[in-house]
Length: 215
Image (cartoon, rainbow, N blue to C red; front, side, top):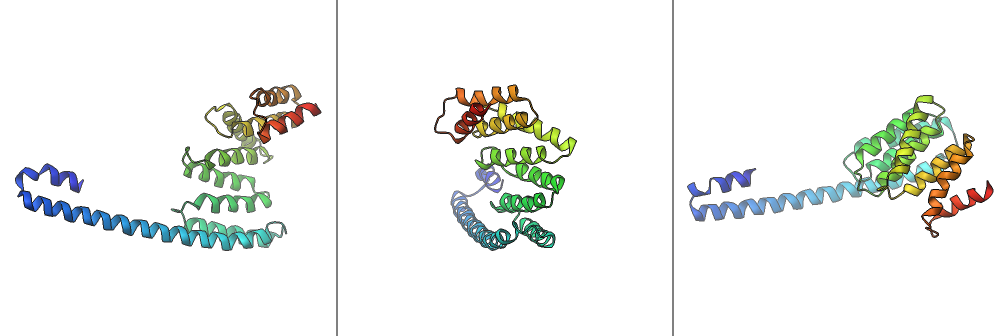
């Protein structure tokens, strides 16, 4: 805006003055960008260091299923996520927080966190669909009728989305959901769509093939 105004008024200004001002503005923008980049790099470094520290503690406590420990680590992750809200690692802090909640069977709270994660990640991010599938699956596992319905609709949408790079993952898990609901014909139909793509080097192809052979 400053630059456009300057150019717009250039006919009223001395040419030499305009060149000097343009040079100063360019220099200031360069310094601002350098300062911003330095700040971002320092912020990301701080976030990475804190995440590594918390992840080490997390790995020790997550398998113990001690209520107090899980509650403590969940609050630590929550605080760290808010502290590094502008970091690229923000979704990762949240996903670990959600896992501690799942360990405590707090599916609704975990689902809400995954809603935040999915909304914070751009669709062109490789992790967008991974987080979206994870959200759908935890909702399906929640034993909450409303959440289960949401999870099913979300997973079905992901399975039907041709732009989803993890489409086969979504289809396979949708088939599993149908299988466990005793809808074996529907499960077979879904798994067969993976086989029909003939991506034999895909883990989802091999899993679908194994399931079909066991029916």
